[in-house]
Image (cartoon, rainbow, N blue to C red):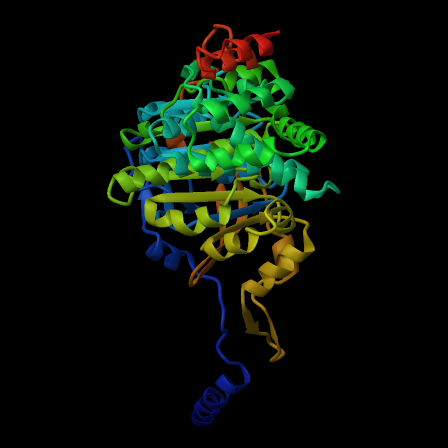
Length: 506
């Protein structure tokens, strides 16, 4: 007995040097429950919402912190049913604002709508639908907010919004062999002509993309010369118009043609044109009561991706301005839940992801892999990765991603005394998916955990009476009112300049 004890003490002395304590390890469920206190799910509201870290359907450990989250899952991994939809449901139970990208319409009218819209109805949400599949729901005029700012005298902010908006549209030329001169001048042309449209003092109903597109021709250039000479324009607007109108004719018309091509998605589709000719939802509503805004995006075409990027960019910018008016932070936390994030481009995303936390705005970003993210956001991807404190990984065949996650997990010393990753590539490749859950690797500062995220059908509190959901239409049924170059001329030309007007109208 004495010899055995001596042997044990001897081993205790040398073991730490041969088998040191691992530098990284997986957290236990008990630790997760201490870090993210469990909440029993009932039909009662939650104090704060977030994405589940662990749940058995009846109890959930929610990550309610104001950190940004990146989720990665390949097609078929269960992102929508085990990640996106349960997150929206937990946010709804806490009555927080939600802005969600609904790819294919699953959340609003598809298989997930009874869970998602059921919990929204239960908690008294105002729901808004920008439907790019059926073109029902609500309308969003990208020019309305800049127009109102311009008419209020806030010209600088109006031009900033326009420049970001048209730069977003110019991304259609990224990766092409087109000379960047034409793209840059096309953006300048759109900004100048839009401000000229604003300066004419027309009714709000006529300020939209179709009216702008109708000015991008020879007659429109003639009208803009009259606007430049007759209207009291800010120097920055006059400078933009001078730059375009003073070009040689062939160069000018090539720039105008480039500008028109950027607007094509808005003017070649009658239903989209109708949807973007009016605004039916005031973003300020999100400071008064809980709102759920859905952007229903088809996944089989990319024609409407610029619209999604512009809407999200303008919405997030508007929320930041409202946060300033509310003392620096929004009174109701707003959550952007972006499924298939790499399908659309949001201008200045690196700024959003790094600055919105202090404004009470969170982002939940879901994509299929790192390469997809880097391709869609080549400049912003590193900042997005650095600022997303929480990472959820479900499944992906992308070897580079698997190696990145394996290295990120840290290392431990194996039984052979050699270091090895805490999570090897094969460990990440064999995460299980069943009908009721998906094994998910969760990583946060100081935390690593393999969780089983339940399918949304496994939450008893989200079971509602069967119901068929549709998209209510709030768009006007009247004809879209636009403005022609002749109407612009009448609005801007001095009444005593009869001869010039007659010559133009001829």
